[in-house]
Structures are given as structure tokens and as C-alpha cells.
Length: 231
Image 1 (cartoon, rainbow, N blue to C red):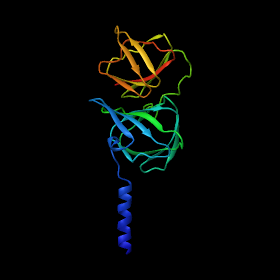
Image 2: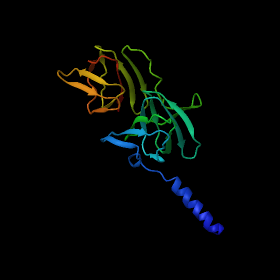
Image 3: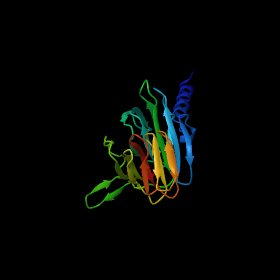
Image 4: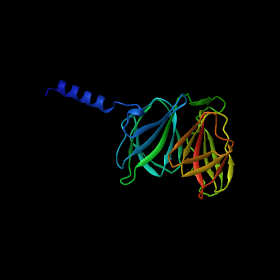
């Protein structure tokens, strides 16, 4: 083989190796909800397997279901191993191609990935302080208590709330615009609408076009854990 042919072969191999796909075309991403606001994917990457190089066309949010170790490779950068915790809520930015490998040899890596079809605020520059002001990208770890609580974060494009409701307790969770509810635990919830129950398994979602109910009551025997995203 001449050096010209070898060079061409190498160029083609590199080009093929870096070809990106949309989330919908990755075998481990499964579209479960789509409307004018969001595309919602359930993701399950088997032990030691990798996604394809995924092109992130929109900003979005990932909610991790269970602890996991992920080797994340952003195009143009080296791999980085990141430990994620159960219930973690993290924002991601558009315009990047990312490959993610499940670094656990036993458990699948599971999450709910939400593409938000409207633009987030990216960053701003504070001329007085002479520094960039980046939007917050991640909620703090869960409080770890059984009491009712809410951890809230405005990601400048979506408001994320990680909610825990103790058994028999009622909690005001009203949102004023469209919202997505993601179950982190088994949910058996009564709403302020008489006779209406909301029952979900971990990882299942529910879309509320007009906002979450004004009040949710935990009718189960264990703390009800969930994430609500308001758009």
C-alpha cells in the first residue's frame, strides 16, 4: 500500500470513528415522551458498554437513577470518569458531541435524559466584577432524611426541584407552567383533585401541560421521592 493510500485509509477511519448521531439514534436511548417543549429519553447502558458519539442538539437535563460511574468523553477532549449519585440532577449544554461508557462491570447505568427544545441562558459577563457568570448546572446531593423537603435550583431555562414527601404528609408543589415529574421511588400520590391518584414506578414520568397540582399527599408507606422540572 502506498503512503497516499494509507493516508486516505487513516483519514476515512478517523472520519467514520468520529461520526455523531442524535440521541434518538443511539441504541441505549429510548424516546418515551415528545411534545413542543421536551424530548424525554429513558437510558440504560449495560455494564462496560458505551453509547455512540451523541450530538447534543439542545440543552437539557439528566436525572440519574441509581449510583453509577461513567467515563464521559467530549469530542476534542480526553475521557473523564465521573461518579453520579442516585437522584442527581445535572444540566448539559447544546453543541457538544459526547460518548459515555458505563464503567461498572455489574450494574447498568440508568438515567432519564430530557432535551429541552427552548434555549437556556448560557452565561453572562459581569463587567464590574470582571468575571463570567455561568448558570448553575447541578443540584446538591440529597439531604438523606425521611422528612418532607424540597431542594430547588433555577438552571436559567428550567427550574429543577427534588422533592421528598414523608408517608401521610401533604406538600405544596404547585408549578405555574408546564412541568415534568420523574419518579425516583415508587409513588402513590393523592392530588388536590378529588379521586385522582398518581401511581408511578422509579424512572417513570408524567407530563403536566398546565403545571403540577397545588398539593400532593403521599398515600404510600415509604418516603416518596421525585424530581419536578418546570419549563
